[in-house]
Amino acid sequence: MKIKALAVAAFASLALIALSAPPADASGKDKGGHSIGDKGKGGGKVVPPGQVKRYTRGSKLPGDLNFKDIDDLSKWKLKPLKQGEKYIRVDNEVLRVAEDTQTVIEAVGIVDDLLR
Image 1 (spheres, one colour):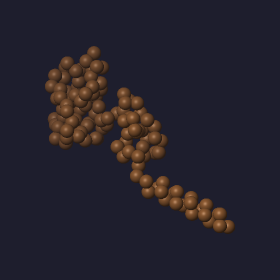
Image 2 (cartoon, helix red, strand yellow):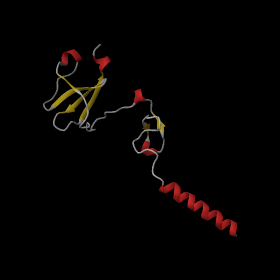
Image 3 (cartoon, one colour):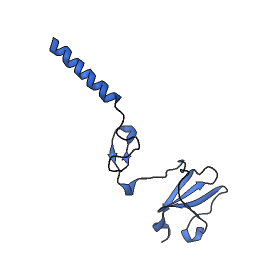
Image 4 (cartoon, helix red, strand yellow):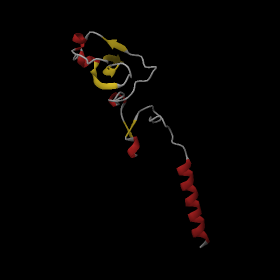
């Protein structure tokens, strides 16, 4: 009986320690710096860097983001914009964003594909 009570106490202590420990990395990246997919579902899948979608519809752009406005739509084969929108280039991606809120409306495509 003593052994059973001791085992239950040990198990409860381990469960408390496991539940109270902070997550290894709250940034959404594993130790190698790769983004983790399905975080909310507990999948813990690692998504290769080339397949990570950084800018999704409705996401707000960070204030310190370096980007270039795209003015020559014909060079990029882009559709005309509605009032209050603009195209920007961030690294190797072209995004359509709302000018006033800097919110992504659409991830248009990859620079290399649009210039062909």
